[in-house]
Every structure is written in C-alpha cells, then in structure tokens.
Image (cartoon, each protein chain N blue to C red):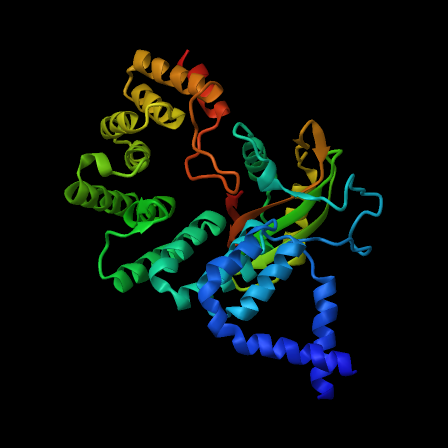
Amino acid sequence: MKICATILFAVLVVEGNAQTRCANIDTLMKRVYKHELGSQQWRAASDSVLNICPNSAVIIYDKAVANMLRGEFVEGMKYIAKAVEIDPNYYLGISAWNHMRYLHDYKGAIADFERLEKVAGRSFVYVTNIHMYMLKGLCYQELGDYAKALETYNTGISQQVADKGEQWVGSYDYLYRGILKFRMGDFDGAIEDLSRQVKEYESLADTYYYRGMAYAAVGRKDEARVDLQLSKDLMLGQGQRRWDPLTVLPDEVYLTNVESALLKLY
Amino acid sequence: MKTLVSVFFVLLTYATKAQAVGEIPFDPKRDDPKFQMCNPNWVWQGYQLKTKMDETPLLVAREFKSQFRTKDEWKNESGIIRVRFLVNCNGQSDRFRLLGLDFDLNEKKFSETLSAHVLSIAKNIQWPSRRVQQQTVDYYHHFSIRIVNGQLVDIIQ
C-alpha cells in the first residue's frame, strides 16, 4: 500500500512538472520516434510524452498519424481536431490533407482549406509542399465540379508564377491541371499542360500516359503510341510513377492502364 | 486516497495490456480458430510491404464494383465502412473488423445485411501474400468504401 502511494505521488509530481519540461518536446519526441509508429512500445512512450506535454500539437499529431495509418479513423480524426485547435495555422492544411487522403472527404477538406485561408489571411499557403489551391482544386475535381476545379488550379498556378516565377510551380501542378483538362474533354489544353509537365519532370511515367491518351483522343495516333510506350518503359525501367504506400492517389496510373491503352491503339 | 489508488491500479492494468494501434485479438465468437499466423509476435502493416508496381487496388476495385449489389432496404444507408483484417503468411485472411462512420466521421452502425454483404466481398478477395527478405509474412490490411443511399460510390485504398 505504501509503495503504491509513493508511486502515485511520483506520478503526480511528474505531472506537476509537465509544462516546464515541455519546452523539450523535440528531445522527448526522440523517445517516441525510436519505436515503430503505432506499436505497443510506441504507445507507452507516446502516452508518457503526452502526459508531460498535453498541449503539444507535435505529439498529438503523431498519435493521429499512427491511428490514420492503421485505419483507426475515429481516434485519428479526434487527435487531428485537437492539433488544429492548438495550432490552426499549420494543422488546418494537414487536416485537409488527411480528409482527402484517407477518407476521400473532399467537402471536409475544402472546409479546412477555407478556414486556413481565413486564419492565414491569404490564399498562397503551402500545404505539405503544394500550393493549397492545387489540393483544393483536386477536391473540386473529385467532387465532379470541373469548372470550379479549373478556376482553383488556375489561381494556384498563376499565384506561384507571379510571386516566384515560372520555374517555381509545384512538381505536379501542370499534371493535375492537364489531367483535369483531359477529363473535361479539352484535349489540346491537356496536351499543352502535360507538355509543360514533361519539362518539369522528364522521367515521370504518368505524364506520358495522360498525354498519350489526349493525343489518341484527337487522332494523333503516332504521338500517342510514342508517349504510351515511353510511359511503359519508364514504369518498367528507371523512371518514376506516382505512388504512395499508404493510399491510392487520385488518377494514379498502373502498368495495366498503360498496356491496355497501348492495345486499344493497335 | 483509496479511490486514487484504485484508479492507479486500473491505469496500471490498462498499461500492461495496452495493444498496438489497430491490433485485432482473436475473438472466438467470430474468428476462425484454424486461422494461424506464422509469427504472431511480429505482424507487419500492409503499408510497410506495398511495392511500386503492386496492382492489388485494381483487383479490389474490380471485385467491389462487380459484386456489390444494392438492396432497397439500404436506401437510407450512407457513410464510410472501413474493413480491417489480417492476412497470414499463407495468403489466408481472417479477423475481419468493420468500422462504420457517418460523413461527420462519428462512429455509426450500418444495417446487418449491408455489413454482411461488404464482409463477404472482402473475404472472397484473394489478398496477396507479402514478402520480406524472401519470406512470406503476416500483415494487417485495411480499405474503406463510401456508401451513399445504399449505393457504392467510392473505394478508398
């Protein structure tokens, strides 16, 4: 009984020191990061750091990620909402991104982006490493509102060009807009954007696939064949394809898609 | 004081039994007792094992789109159903668990028949064996579907 009371007292003292030790959150997080995210050992380390720093968005968001990654969405989104309360400037964008990525909740994501724009007082905000309007545009596209998606992409791209110059547009921005134009049936517009994208990122198989599809749609079969074959070669060789171990991306291209497009051409 | 001590003990018990996030312990009421894992002490997560050229999502989408048949009685059913389960080193799957959410992301219960239908499609999919250094391993996997008025509208993988 005495021992228990002592341990309990010790726990309470640690709690009391909590806020003063919290300045060290980066050091404390190292204790958490050394365990596999979401594992039993991680949980123990994570809980103890959260005890010390109950208002640290960093530890709260780490808990969110562990839950989202493993499909525990209710818990995960609760932690994300908490992180947003603490640091809306940073976590609103992250929240939107989680809504999109794990739940395809595009309306929820747009609401977050709109709040973020108000909090930040401007629309040119990077979320992860993308202009927020490119992600917001993708949400409209996925909701089927192509006109709004195009308008949003246009603003995102033109803000970056005006502010930083043509070479500072995001790595996939023209791909996003090119795919949207392709979906809208604006094949020439798609070819134009995807050709810009090729200049941005030459070894990306996805771009050649969509440009090949756009060429095929306007009857430019030879160019279509060259692009689709190149897309296939890049996928099978040293090139890249957009993929993510955690989720399937919107408009992700698989080898099967490229091969069946090639077959249709012949 | 007594209450505090009991609270402490409850916390201590919880701490020793704390599970990994998303862990699915065996439940004799719904799980197959014959389902075995090669290494129950080291179960991987699907996202740790996915490879660049993996096309499982195409298979899953095809299966769901072709096998999902809505029913009249589900016309008021909307939300997200997440399916989480284990795949063992022999490529068998079991311990399926559903999590229902409404579109505000609150937990909700879907109709029994709809849940059973989703579960049966998920169970019939041949989930791939995954390898780590030439060895097949056990892993957790999950995916979700979005349902609007009883219709399958999206598959989230």
